[in-house]
Image (cartoon, rainbow, N blue to C red; front, side, top):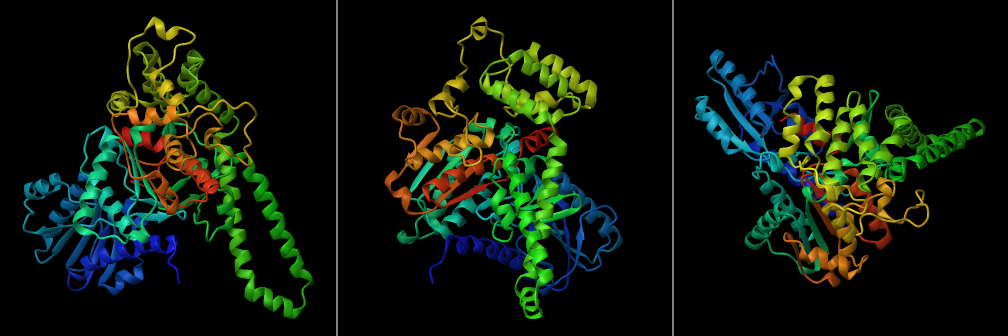
Length: 565
């Protein structure tokens, strides 16, 4: 029997479980597992409580104040965040003061930072705490989406810290071992180049690939090469769900209920995830009518028919009703949160992309920064990126309104955004006030055909252009790169422009791309809008895509990560 791409991707879960099991087996006897809260959902993706019990885990705790573990062997599972690690070391100090016979293991995800080793020494715990690392494989969700569930943007673009890049490289190497080495590699960005070099080094020294199993292509891109896709508001169902609801490791939460976002087990989700939001409610309504009709039909069934229905259909219908109810509730939450203001938001974003109505856009940002701070800061960052910067005089009233509304403890926020590349300041220039002035960003976007000029209204029900994910106003860079590599876009000017970029590389023969899956990886986080845009290309070409990144995030989460530095 042929091994499918889905079968290969399923092995990632098994490899991650094996890595953790090996560590548990090396710690003898019964043990307590204390887990940092933000890692619990990710851990559930590849190992369950039954398996943990099988390998000696007696009790499982959430890392919090006042926890009282009972076994002498204690394993703390934490991220590389030094604040979380310091909290664990404080806990260990407190336990040692009461009982010297304990054995502590600090299991750090995805790798042990050098600063942590120094911190352990400074705390006097070097001989008492065993440091170990757990680099789990990509966490799979939504069919073909892989994520490390670790946000790297702030590390890369604010701290200039590249220590987590080896984790991406190692996971890409593992992915290549499973689906095959790419015949063609497209790379755009300095961090992507570093990751690619690391991956190639690992493949050279550790792997031998069967040419028959090679994948078609791998596309690597830095997040900084397309900030608008992270800052714009998507209009697909999944994109807006990510904006409004909480989604963790492929599970969405809404009004006390939750559901796994898996198109294989949730047919409703598989149908609506990438649809324009305006076409989701009609589908859900029709689906509800079908289920109601089926339920009414059971009232007239004979006994034999009823037995057969209960045996074959009842459980499926019950689960379908639950899933449908979740998605209807999610849509209601989205509408209630965005409401009538969504059209105005879309209009402002479109104006920013077209470099017009600048004064009105700035006024909109200032007016809304009280009730919608993150949304307004996203628009300011978008304006800065698209127009090659903003002036101090434009930012000052917005900054003042933000501090008045949300407190002067947020004074560093605008400086942080500047350091992270989300805001750039420029001096006012009379040439930039001319009607036909065009920013460097707009010129580059035009060369890559990212700003479509639709001669007729865009068909949002059955879209043919990836720009539909942003209401027809913008095509994500990663989608255009994918079109170029699959020969969907053959304009020589666009291709020549790409090759002229200093951090662009293309290796291999493009003709070989059609013969295997395409790996699409963004270093610094990928968005639901970009995934939907590429899925449209996947459908039109008949290709198979695998999306990979350090995290799947939204513009609000990007701003939150900068704010919480």
